[in-house]
Amino acid sequence: MRTNRLRQIWKEGGRTVNAWLGIPSAFSAELMAHQGFESVTVDMQHGVIDYETAVQMLQAISTTDAVPLVRVPWREAGIVMKMLDAGAYGVICPMVNSRAEAEELVSFCRYPPLGQRSFGPIRASLYGGADYHDHANREVLVLAMIETKKALDHLDDILSVPGLDGVYVGPSDLALSLGFRPGADPTDPAMLEAISHILETVRGRGLFAGIHCLSAGFARRMWELGYHMTSLLSDGRLMVMKTRELLAELRAGAGGSGVSGY
Image (cartoon, rainbow, N blue to C red; front, top):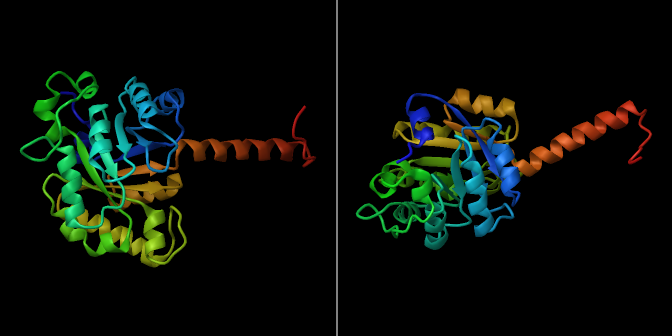
C-alpha cells in the first residue's frame, strides 16, 4: 500500500502545510495540488462540493504527491466510508465533543476487528494499491476536530480513544463556543491559551495536531509552537484576496479613477 507521507513527515519531526478546497472543481483542485502542499483537503462540510465532484477532485489531487484528505460534513458512517473508499488518505471530522463520538468516528474508519468499516475500496485500492485492505488501518489518518468548549472539557477522554491519530483545531467555531468573534489567527489570550492547551495535551499522548490559519505568519507561529500541520485559508479565499490585491494595485496606479473596465 502507498505510504501516508504525512505520518512519515510528522513522526520524523517535520511540519506540513495543507491546502483547503471548497470550490467544486477538479481543475482547481489539480492547480492547488501542484503548488507544493504536502496535503490537500476537500471540504465537504462548508465547501460547496458533492460526492461525485469530490471523487473527481481526489483523482486530480492524485496527479501529485500531495496526500488527499477530506473533511466530511458530519460524523455519519455512510459519507465517511464512501470518502475513504474514494481514496481519501485521511478524514477530518467536525464537532467531535466526547469520547463516545470519537469512538464512533474511529469505528467508521477502521476495518474489523478495530472498527466497523465496510469493505469496498472501489477507488482506494487503485490509489493505495492492491494490498490496501492489509494496511489501511495503519495508514489512513483519523483526525477529530476540536472546536467547542465541550470538546475542550473532554479532551483527555477524546484523545484516549484507540485508533484516533490526532486532532484538527477549528478556530472559528472554538472562538464562538468560548464567547469570542469567529475567525482564524486569534489574538485573545484565552483563545491562544486554548490552542496551546490542545497542542500540549495532544503531544503528551504522542498524537498529531493540525490547525486552520489565515496568514503565513500565524501558521509559522503554530509550527514553532509544535503543531504538525497548518492549513492556509482556502482556494476561494486565496482567489478573492489576490484578486482584491491586484485590483487595488491597478486602480491606485490609475490615480484612483475608479476605472472598472475598458
